[in-house]
Structures are given as structure tokens and as C-alpha cells.
Length: 133
Image (cartoon, rainbow, N blue to C red):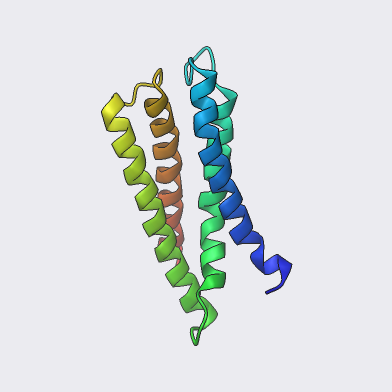
């Protein structure tokens, strides 16, 4: 596999790793996590990593889906898997937010707000992409 062919998978894995590492650093930095007056830089790092992972996922999935499928069929499957992965991320975000009431002053609430927002934006992108055909 060429180096350029691995780039989407590396971006997805790297973004996910950055997001995961940012969580304990965000907790260690303490409050305020997300407010009108202040925004934790570790929450920004989490959001950036999650965004990179979510948006690199369909390209990494497309390259992993091989076999006898033609390119259009591989893209359709990759987009469906992208939607499924993003729905899973959305579910985790909602579950994390329910416990805290999506309170941005709590660690779980701030993470949930960012996670749910990004997942909804990605799912909206998937819907528009599928409607556009």
C-alpha cells in the first residue's frame, strides 16, 4: 500500500487518539470547561481530534473496502459505514450528556455537547451527500 493510500487511516487514527488523550488532560486542567467567558484549550483539542477522525473515516473506509466492487459501490458502502460509525459516536455523546444534563460546567456535559454537535453535523453531511446522489 502506498503511503498516500494510508493517509486517511492515519488521520482517522491520529484524530481519535488526540481526542482520547485530550479527555484526561481536560479533566486535569479543571473548570471552566465550556462557558461564555472561557473555553478550555483541551476541549478545543478534543473537538479538533474528533473532527479529524470523523471526517477522515469515509476515505479510510473506502480504501479498506476492496474486492470486486467498483468505485461507486465502494463509496456507497463507505458512506453507509461512516453514518453507522457517526451514529455510534452520537449515541455515546448522548449517553454521556444525559448523566450530566448536558451541563457545560461538568466534564461529561462539555464533552457531550461537543461530541453531539460534531456527530449531528457529520450526519447532516451524510444525509446531504446521499440526497445529492
